[in-house]
Image 1 (cartoon, rainbow, N blue to C red):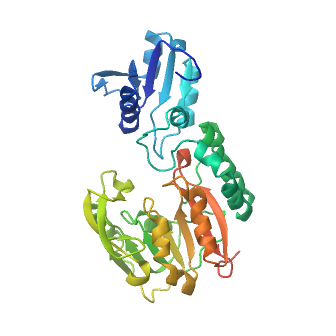
Image 2 (tube, rainbow, N blue to C red; image 1 turned 135 degrees about the horizontal axis):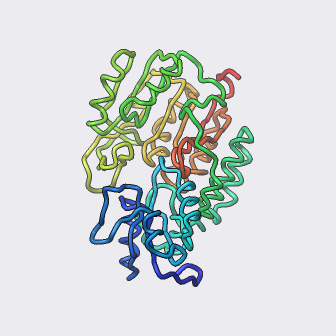
Length: 354
């Protein structure tokens, strides 16, 4: 199945959502699996397919006769460590999700940055252009390693996640007191983490369309000068579907889902004069930036923009900001495993202290 190799057993590591999607995709191709592998000892079977611990399965079978497809797609598991453990147990071959999608590129159910790896190869010139404009060697090396990982599926290419998402210690310090716009505020966790690190706020404007998250956010920020909006941000003022099933990963959808309101930052916050804007809004970042053009031009705020929700965002959001002609220096940092939580920092070179 993979480069002509034949194995007696085909296994999927991960019996939750991603692993189940891999199994369902294989079933549609007429390919069955022998078992799921998972660390969760409480799982015995999923849809009639047995679930086993990787070590236990290897004790009862010849692991060299098995090919394992990684069915993990999240920001918190060190998949490189999982791969190393499977290899140490003697499994015949371990296939990353990236390799899986390269072999089966059609109709894949995965979101975010996971696409046919050849897509990144096709856009090599645009990636190279981004690299030229990154302000430090850490950013350039990180870009190289992210691209290598997303093409090869080799988790060992990725560095350890950087701490302090949205306010890294190794970047220029944000100007204080902060006038902060938090797009995709979730429960106010970013503001809480920044305050715990000693950052001082003059004013906060938060946007969170999920009402369950919003209900937690409001009391979390009640001792700040904060205005909180139970809505999303985009390039227009409209109502649209919102799928909040994944909690922090809730996202806008063209049809279905809960109806939410989206607004333009330019319309919602006239005169707010932010000096820092953060966006983690599940792929709506380009539209939200376009809806903040006047704010960006007038106040030149520093930006912390998530660029992992779509494959092309790795370079296209930089291209969009560069096209605005503002005095930014660009940095790249990754704050989670598997290149999730990759953030483009656009630092106003005329304002932030060195």
